[in-house]
Image (cartoon, rainbow, N blue to C red):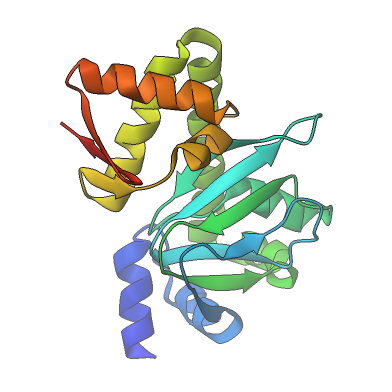
Length: 211
């Protein structure tokens, strides 16, 4: 219990009330998933909110035509506001979530949400800050789609992924990138080659290195 308490305090400094930390340990469930595993599917009912401890989670949204587009990453110390919203409203998820790498998180069950909002000030603040942070990230995504050319979006996407992985070289395919950016593999391949010619990246077999 002491180890888990320290893990929660280290990753979530805004959650400071001892009773709340003990409640998270008691009611939450530690879950570990391998890279590539889906945590949430669009249309499924969400029964928990993940508090990320290790790894990174990619959150996607589906448009009217059934195509998915990348929204944001969840990193250690973060939670998903859209998941929280689905939990509280008891409605199907409007996003999907996939583990980018081996990931560990605490699954907080939906049935404790209302009670914790009433009882714990730090939980109230954490939920409000989660909404605020994810809202700002969504605005950044909208701005990127509305105002940036696709080559600029592509470079921004690669820089963010490098930051998530804490490495300048990443293993990925052109098709995976196209899927995330709601584009075609052919277009992404052409833009990647242009970025390489400009000396901004180096392409390898299923690998991309930021220079």
